[in-house]
Amino acid sequence: MIVAGFGFRAAATADSLRDALARAGKDADALATAADKAEAPAFRALADALSLPVTAVPPEALAAQETATHSEASLAAHGTGSVAEAAALAAAGPGARLLAPRAISGDRMATCALATTRTEATP
Image 1 (tube, rainbow, N blue to C red):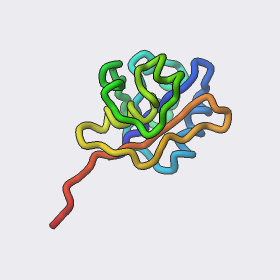
Image 2: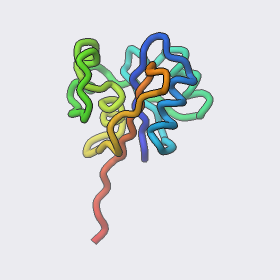
Image 3: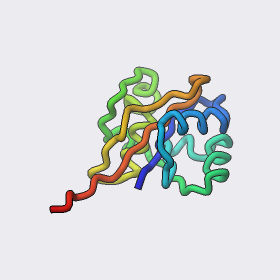
């Protein structure tokens, strides 16, 4: 399962989020973001358009994730270096890994990171 985690500014549009997802490079099975952003109209519009489930990640779960990217603004606002990366990892569950660092939308209003649950290797 692939989870697309999002970080975004208040002025981000559904197109901003869709662009960030496209730049991340793969289709997702679920979406995730910080709990305080999960009901944002642009995020809800994207989730509805894609018919994907949403995970609203609580602050403590965001802060517990180790991210590849370290934004000072994100750290100050959400306690994590990347909301997108932390949300994707937290929603994907224990043992999750990032497929790549976050992607940034062309208008720089949204970021998206993809995480997958690590599976056991077949012997």
